Image (cartoon, rainbow, N blue to C red; front, top):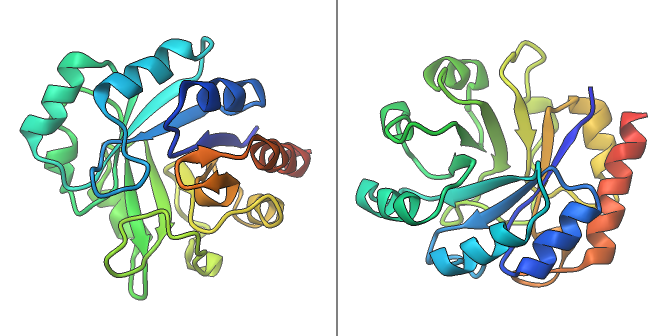
Length: 207
């Protein structure tokens, strides 16, 4: 099965369009004000409106208030929600939207238990744990922590680069890979050369 690619932290319509043309399956937009990649609803609308068909729009939230998420969803229809904080399954399932749940990979994490806990999730996004940083650290975790027995789709994140993503795909066989900081020229601005190399490396690994 082909490995999907999500390019996260898109802040400009032109970056979203070019990423999609290079083969990105999903575009992530960050609705977390503490992030340097934060987008407003108006920015997100412009990004989504520019995208070609069949590209999934993903909204990333970190411990957001229910009222804030609903405010955004009333104004802008996302395809998929990404919960990247300490949200419970009940909190994730309030919105009648498919969602993925980020699991912060640190010592003692039991992914098989997380899979049962978030049984309603479309997939689990595995990201590097770093205290005080909900994501986008640019650091990878030990891939040996991912058990072979996991059955829910795995979205692998955390420190993936154009240079190491093929190894990750071959080792983990994830449903999807998710990249942000390693394909940027500066925070929030994508380097399309790096995006292209990243996606090309994934496609070569699939073959």
